[in-house]
Amino acid sequence: MADLSVSETTELLRAWADGDQKALSALIPRVYRELRRLAGRCLQNERPGQSLQVTDLVHEAYLHLADVSRLDWRHRNHFFAVSATLMRRILVDRARRRTAAKRGGGVKGMDVEQALDWSSKRAADMVALDDALSELARVAPRKAQIVELRFFAGLEVKETAEVVGVSEDTVMRDWKLAKAWLFKEMTHS
Image (cartoon, rainbow, N blue to C red; front, top):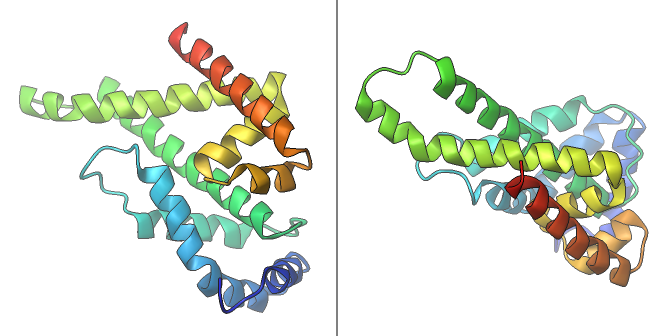
């Protein structure tokens, strides 16, 4: 964000949290490129040719962000972490709808069935990851938050440590344990 310093971003976030909708209007164009990067990262494991594109995901997340009222934005990384979480939820909701349609959505003909196979597998994987991450959040909230920030938001270790309020060593330790826990949970379900 060459045209907007980190502290100015934080000031806009805080003004928005205080109810200034103009601050949101000023903020979004300036963080749009980073939101697109986050959306691209979230979509990288989606099926090729799927209908949701990076711009669509950013815009849908924006609609959710615009509805957020009075969130205490700590800093720009906090904003991107919340944005990534919203994008993840949007994708998981879409994946759940796809798997529901696959189970009983009136799919006709073998060609359609085969075409949905790969898509359905990816959707099921996304749902399984979300379910496992939700369970991890129940038993180890900080580890789940670190997974969200690192995997979905694409934050670096230092940025993640800043958002969570722990050391970089703690982030790395929690990251490794969380990945192992999620792998075990997803492969033994």
